Image (cartoon, rainbow, N blue to C red; front, side):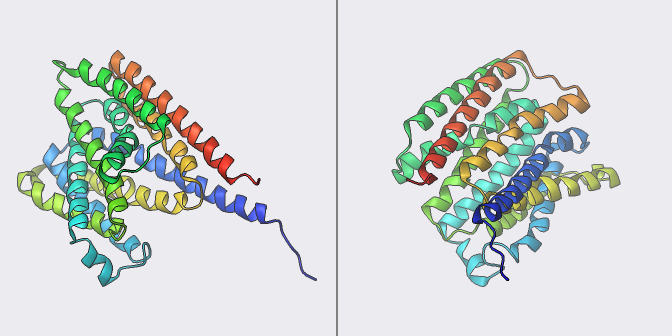
Length: 302
C-alpha cells in the first residue's frame, strides 16, 4: 500500500522552515545595537575585531554553501567585480560600526532601510534594468524620510554618524548590485576576505588595552551572530520563499533594532527620527506588500 500526500503540505512545510530561519536571522541582525552599546572599546578596535571574527566564523559555512570551498570560487573574487565587492563590503562594515558609535541606533536602522531602493536606482543606472514605478515612488518617499532624519542631526552631534550610516547604505546597495553585474562573484568568500581586509586596515589604529575578557566575548558574539550566523540563516531561509516574503519579514529589523536599545538602554531617538522613520517604515511595508501581491498573482493558476 502506498500513501500519497498533497504536494501543498510539503511546500508549506518547507515554506514554514524558511520563515523560521528568516525570522531567526532578523532577530540576530536586530541585536547589533545591543552589542554596540555594551562594548567599551574605541571605534577602531570594534571595527577591526568584529570584522575579523565575523570573517573567521564564516569560514566553516563557506565549505557547504555556494558550491563549497573551491579554488575556482576563490580565484573569481580577485576579478574586478570581486575586488569591488570586497572593497564595498569592507567600507560597509566600517561605516556600520562607526555609525552605531556616533549616532542613535534608530537613525542607523532607518537610514539603512533605504538600501533596496538605492540598489534599484543603481540597477537602473548601471544595468539599465527596468524599475517598477512603485519602486521609484517608494524610493523617493524613503529619501524624504532620510532627509528628515539627517537634517535634524545637523549641529546636534550625530551628523557624522548619520553620514556614516548613509555611506554604509550606499555601499551595501552596491553589494546588492555587483553580483547582478557579474554572477560569478561568490558572496561568502568575498565576505570572508572583506572581514580580514577591514581588520588589516583598522588594526593599526585599534587599542589592545581595552580588550579584556568582557570585550573579547562581546566581539566574538557580535561577529558570530550578527555577522556570520544571521547571514547564513537568511541565505538558507530566503531560498525557501518568494523574495517579497523574505523582505517583508526582514523589515522587522527596522523596528526591533531600536526597540531593543530603547528597552535595555533607554536610548530615545529625537522626534525627527520617529517622523522620518515612520515615513520609511510605512513606505517599505506598502512596497513589500505590493510586491507580495504581485508575486502571488503571477504564481496563481490561470
